[in-house]
Length: 81
Image (cartoon, rainbow, N blue to C red; front, top):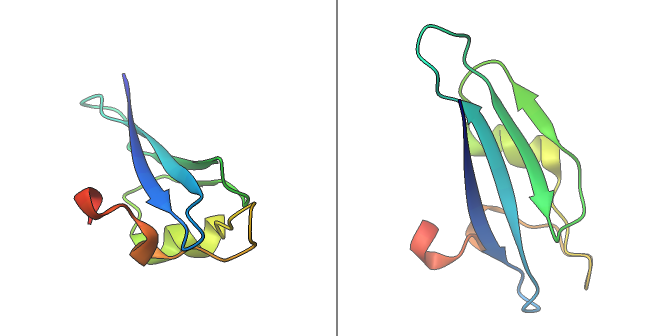
């Protein structure tokens, strides 16, 4: 079964988006995490293990489509920090 989690983010200009993560949480099967962006510009990322946020941000390069600012972990909404 795949578990999906959304991490909301807000740019300094007020634009809202999110990092979406899908992960395999089935016992006795190979672990993976897959990341994509919602309402943000950038790429996607998949790892066959557990990822850490610095690597996720380096791979995704999340950017605000409204003002072009590159987002960082400081842009996570406070309830997710």
